[in-house]
Image (cartoon, rainbow, N blue to C red; front, side, top):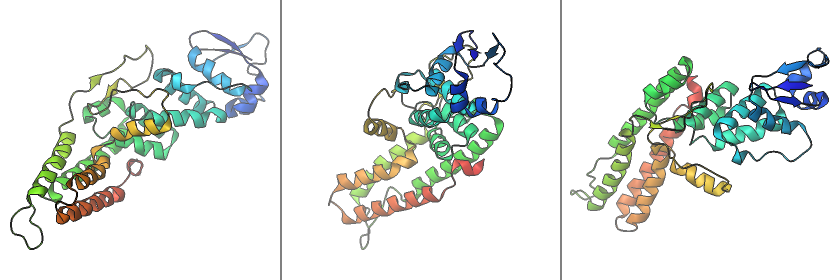
Length: 293
């Protein structure tokens, strides 16, 4: 079968391989498409995407997706979903998930289109610090309506953390405020305030290719500029944890304050433990983004 990319590159592909690895081509197996001599089947994907995608229908080493540029990677992930090439769907969706902290809006849209609930909720968390006007210009109306409700819930939880404990906290049997607690609260409040103050104009990113529907050029001010390369899973997870939303990182911040405080004040340590439990409970009980769609 002769396939032609959107940029007019020709690919000669074994029809049997296509039918064995692609549900779409298998379903079209009884038709006459591509069977007429010299007939060319035009596809909407670029030659870069087809070159990668077609490797998954042959018995050969598969491409290293760590080296694929993002614009090509997300188009490849869409293509294997479109043609239902099951041998490539898993690895492509996993690669998309690995990049969600660098391209949260792209990954959110991908996961919504293909109903990947876990990836959808993770990428939605990564977009919480992106300004609403940016999201409005990047996502469909139904997704934005769900996202704005989700963000408002997040802001309510964030505000709750400010009022859960005050800067002054007398302990049992003591009328004066604990000096150690004041230090703990000041640093924790600074972390929370930084999250509220992060909204601003998005930083410019790599310009999109002409004709591309990609949205990776738009990221919030809190997104990290570091790019994951071929690092091992532990390093990748470490970088991702550093870019989590502040509410997800708050228990870690509180635990660090416990460690720093040591045995200086047992009451502070107890109250910080209570704060951790309450924060984790509230976030756990909150509705996920997928619940709003």
